[in-house]
Image 1 (cartoon, rainbow, N blue to C red):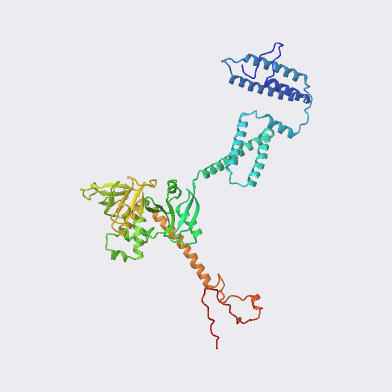
Image 2: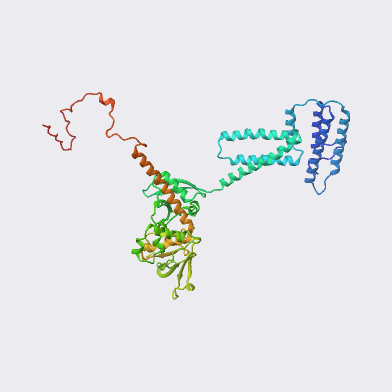
Length: 513
């Protein structure tokens, strides 16, 4: 038997139940009410309580049987009492004047009789709590003002829903979805902001100093460079770069301006010795300042060096300005390090837009015999340091191809060695062109524009300073101190104190004639 219903007693009366308790409370409250409307309100309340009691009994069945007969008998008895009470009241009596505040209070206290109304209010309450929780960055004054404004709005909306006419109710229903949409939009924006990854990074300078920055995953390297320009007050040359170093592999890579900084730094291990440097690298955009080195490398060096600026711009337009990017047609012999050994063997490599290919031993250089060595989608190119000693490389002009997540030596890391520095620059920067394409050229244009803007502002400031409009002419002699000028001139004393012990005696200069 459910705990809310008990067996009848021998005296014919039944124990106190939620329905009977509610009726007793209503009977006491009806002593001050003498209208049929009050009885009708009590009848509705008992009916609602009966529904709740029935629902509770159905959910709390014991042994598969529910004593619905007892509930029906109890409900019939209570309805009889209510009918007798309503008949005894005078139907013609006028209802007493009630305070609107008490009506509003009773409306809010009793609860919701409409299911849609209750759901809407619950949605508003939960949404308000979510928005309030997401406003963690708001000030205390704004948060308290928000609470003070939201509470009267909810009370007034609840009162309007029970008292206002149908026209006001329809107007509230049209305004309410707009308010919900705004709250949901604000909540989604806060959630999106909370999901953004942020890192606090330490950037080392060339002079040994450092700067600490907070960067998030939405920032590109060019934005971080702009912050460093503001902090260091250095010139905004296109050669400034952010470079990561890996001491374990003795490699280095300069981040591209369009890259995100948080993602590659997030793959560093917890106790990694990797560092981030803010340095100048003249090779950063050499493929645009000297494009003839990459697209005319087969010609004689004397003819390549004498090319004018107009021919350089024509080369850039032909190879980067068209619908398709043209990768430098680079090929040659490189030394390949064998896996797990300090042995380097020469192989003939060819650069294509999709990756690097090599000719196996005993094969020809035809396209059908080429074997893919590495593709550029998942690997980056790194320069090396002192590989002649570390891995017994033929020269120190080596580069590495590896996935950014690999932080230690692995057979997935490819080591290649070039004959000289010029060949190394050709291969490393040509791989960058094949990997990034036209995005690299757009980054170069943005860097040139940034540097030219600074030069324009600097030259204008120098012109204003030279014309005397920006700063006044400096005095050649410092101004006189008025306090010092009031004292009369005194000649130096004739007595010169002796030097301290252990020091040579200083002979005074002879008097001037």
